[in-house]
Length: 437
Image (cartoon, rainbow, N blue to C red; front, side, top):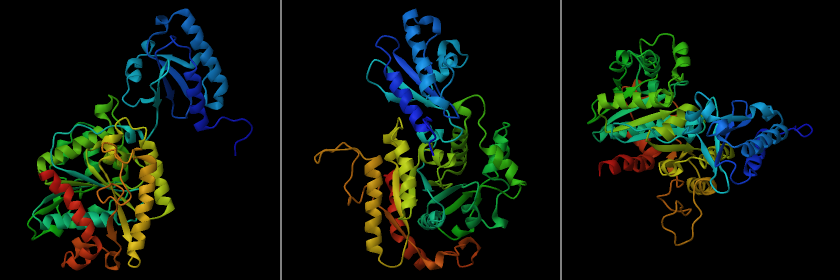
């Protein structure tokens, strides 16, 4: 309910943008709208207050009064509405923050938004530099329970049979699944990913990183092997206190952020293990782990989905948010949808509906409008098999409902895995083959 004339969250930003665009020409060259953790908005100017002439300051003070009145509970008092970067200790860093989004480049004032959030910042940050060259593939689902981890294990086994050295990172830290599936308790290494983050926080990551990778029994007897970096190890001890410390950012800035430390972890283990491919099992949902795994780790991202309104609405929220991404092109070109848990009956009809729904959300949020003869635009036809919306199929199979291959003396059943994931595996193989060519 919206009582009276209360200004709501979305309205506040719209009003602030309108007011900021009304600044007369020549007063300022750029403005940054800073939205705090509660959603309150104020203005940041890129110089000292004394650098502005008196007539410009009068206009800015008038703007502060108008904003303070019009933004309701999302406003600051007039005397706190204006921030001057040159007068703040960290002002220059804030004014040039990589998290600033360009809202308006045309008109008398270039307008930016700096959104201060507790979580979610990494969805709009570009990929981090890395020192390793092996391909990386992230397995992600906007919802859990869609067969993501099972498909990952099947593909890893398939690659090991082809002689590939596969390295798997279990980043589903709140609900480790791949760790348990691929490593029975007696096969766990001493430490896991949560141990690395805790020890790295006090400068001694080296104490654990050579004892946090173990071979999976699933690859025994294969031409290649499967190596797993689990969420936890035999010596992890009390898991929850360590998990709570995994996400802490160091105070020194971006290079000590959680995302940069995760990149450091992945690269350091890759350097030690020298895999042919690294597979990252991401936590489901719109979480910071997923943000880093998809947008920042320089990985191809497989987006697992079931054909339901809840799934497409959730992906739509994420894709719409990505439209603000400064490096949108580098993100969307690394995406591929997987149609998961396809039922045993009416498969062609199911895939046809799935493809149409995937195309709708990509077309609305990520594809560019283009003329029929345009070749450079990021735009694909509904039935283009090379398009990111065109689903790689992963079929539901009753035999995989109690999937626990590492604890079985028989290992994987080739017939069952072929029926469920044969087409998916053949498509996924291209991600490794393309990198080798």
